[in-house]
Length: 455
Image 1 (cartoon, rainbow, N blue to C red):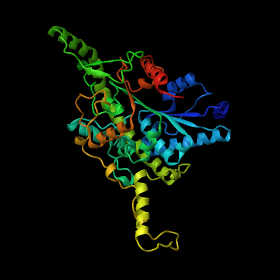
Image 2 (image 1 turned 60 degrees about the horizontal axis):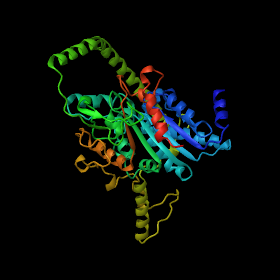
Image 3 (image 1 turned 90 degrees about the vertical axis):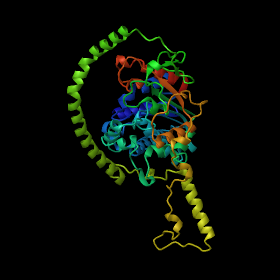
Image 4 (image 1 turned 120 degrees about the vertical axis):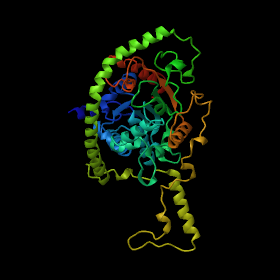
């Protein structure tokens, strides 16, 4: 009944712009209800059609960016086909990704691009909120960080491996996130098609997706808020920072008297003692439960992925398994033609219908020199386009530096976000639930609709 009402409502107007929202890890469509309702209230169903991707809900996000992207691509194509049968033709597409959903959205648009979608449909807005574009591999040296990166990559199935850049994707033999940012890939080609590319990144208290990875940056000037002065964007104080000059090093401040500092620290410690005591009890229990659940979910995810690969999970996705590297595929074809033309002989089709040419055995995925990942010494940011240059670079991996270079070449409009008085801002940036402490997240949505989202 609800599905019938949704279809009837979707076909009651002639809006030709489809906006797709993609939730994050462990998420579900309800997490993006505020964004969905805000879009609908601003533009109405007569101008915009909105769907919130539902096939990756909850633990299905364990199954990785590739599987998630294929599910969303199929969901979009089915929706467009339903509308077409009702006499409504989609002419514009916008994609919005929250957290891990931003990576899934980037994979999805690559698949759509490869299937010729953007020859007939105009890509308009591509927006991410708190998305780990560089993964979540901790950019610090030391044994504790190494241990965290090791454990973290093994507790979220293939999604964890991809987020920590420890996976080896298909024949490429390198992490999926590097392929998503390869200049020769279908994913970058698709991203460049969008008229507006925008991202929002929490500057503090985002324990899921730190600033540097959401902002696509080698610097994080907000590690010590006492050492910097921030500048807000007029009309959106005190949440959205000025994208052109968000931060500068703080002027030298007169230190507080010793007794004042001592009293402040003692007061802070006394306030936090009950929390630390509670954590000392709950963390060991919670960690044990989490690891046990992770083992169970990893097993279930592996089984789902296997069924997905075999096409026995209720639908087949083999049509989406296409060459990921546009230029390399093109070069392989050109090389094949050159080999045939220069061989001085004619190749014949065998009895089974296959060509006997050796050129067919050449890989369409082999990276050329432009797709290789280089050391960070070759990567210098342009101070004219990077408003937070001048701060020390983080201890990122060579792959992460190359991802920054590639995505900055494509270009995003970047907005740092400061949500105050909350311990975990990751959920607040999209108002994931109607909590009072998430109120400032509404300012983020307002700015996006006021300044960035184009109908």
